[in-house]
Length: 176
Image (cartoon, rainbow, N blue to C red):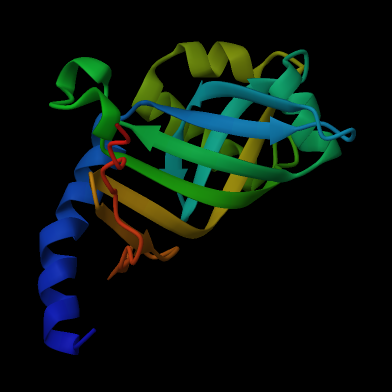
């Protein structure tokens, strides 16, 4: 893709990706346990220091999975009620690696403050519970889907590239 075309694409889609990140309060987490059994869940998040950060209890299955297998797939997705087409909801997905912040470290305190600023005082209360840990996800290459046939690769710094779909949707042949 030419630099000029890339710049136009970035200028058009970059703000839309930022809007999705701002409007979406929770992130969908797809995890697996050590036996490969999948689990999908969600958690309120904040983007802080280039990472998605969540405060979740190790009582929860997804937190235990992240401790066993620190690989995760993340998704931000438009609310169903805001979507024009239910089959083509706007979404941003990333693969990431999880790490746990040391309790009461400077990084921990910074993350708790950021989460509290975004989600309210409940964060201060939950962060005092021993079973709650702060997980950070550093996103790797991702995908922004704007609609049918509109998929764009997204780098960790939100640079957008068009993903050309060689195999588009095809009508089923009528046999009759």
